[in-house]
Image (cartoon, rainbow, N blue to C red; front, top):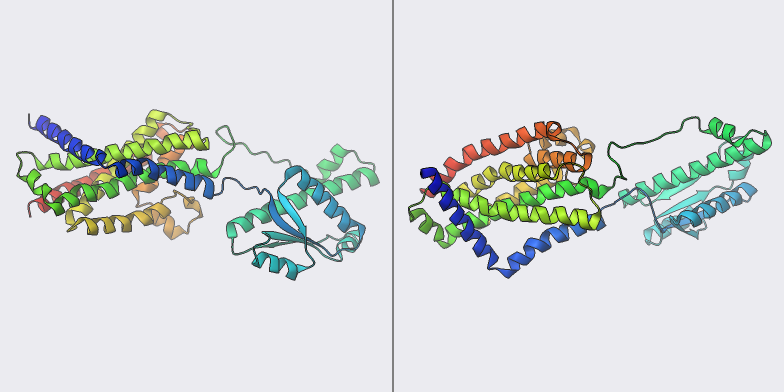
Amino acid sequence: MGIRNVIRHSAWICWKDLLEFSRSKLRLIMLVLMPLFMMVMVGFIFPSGNSISDTPIALVNNDTGALGSSFVTQLETINNKTGMMKLSDATDYNDIKTKLQNNDINGGIIIPENFSSEIMAGRQGVITIVIDQSNPQMSLTIQGVLTKTIEAMGKQNAIYNLNNQFNISLTTATAMITPYNIKSEGIVPGEPNYFQFVAPGIIAMVVMMALMTGLPHAISYEKDIGTLDGMLAAPINRLSIILGKVMAQTVRGMIQGFIILILAVALFGVVIEGNILLVIFLILLTVFSFVGLGILITSFTENEETATMVMMTLMFPMMFLSGVFFPLQQMPWYMQGLAQFLPLTYATTALRKVMVLGADIPAVSTEVLILLAFGIVLLTIAVPMFRKAMSR
């Protein structure tokens, strides 16, 4: 009978909080707009590939020989087919530097004056790629694409020369120049992109944010305005208050999580390779792992403002250290070690395995157990502290 009363009272408190939330039109609008803005921002601002398109590039040809002109013609032919650059002329390195400083171009290519003579003498001709180091992401992409393009042009010329000068067949010449043929194959179909990588992490992060920002308002706000005293004086178990508040914020977090999931699939073509029921289970488990932390912080803070500040202080490091936007493997070793103590790391990893790689339960069992451990340990500490805080 006691358990039934706890559940019934928790449901009423949950319903009260959701009803109060639904009465604010602005809150309802932001419930949808916040995940929508986040998805659109990440989807269109962050890079989705490693190619370039219509990128302004300045070209300097200081070579007076035939091979310099041939290089330019070959580059323009490739560019007309791919549309990766908007080529313009420049006079020298300083001209390219000035244009980069004025944001007129994103990079430059310089053909030196000894380009033809070096190749005719049996030595390599040097092509210089000038990049804008104030934009590392763009400059690395431009450098990589131009390097591969120029190397491919060199191989094409070498194959042509072998074919014509030594009467070697194109197939044999190709095998002599490039003896290795590299083939890449992923474990799931389709072409990978950055948004496919980041979408699972955003789902976990938004669920965390909804819970961590909602609990301070749900508990500390009522403490500030005095309505919490009325609930404490009512003939209900204090555990019902905790459960009711948590249930209401769980519903809110799950709604926002599903909104992001739908937007990811509908707007950005994210394909869920794994079981959708397993994805839902992992989202619920993410909520469970953060509930204790939210209650714990709310219990020892004096008011809503303090609780919100503590929550934000904890959330921002988790957002950037948990592999949501950047792979953990690219972080320094000490940052990777710190990430192992954050529940968001395991929630992001598990969702990514299921959504992107099509993993099943055994493949995410470690993450599931760690998230359960986080939730159980934090709730074991938080519930007694909440009860003690409410008795003061």
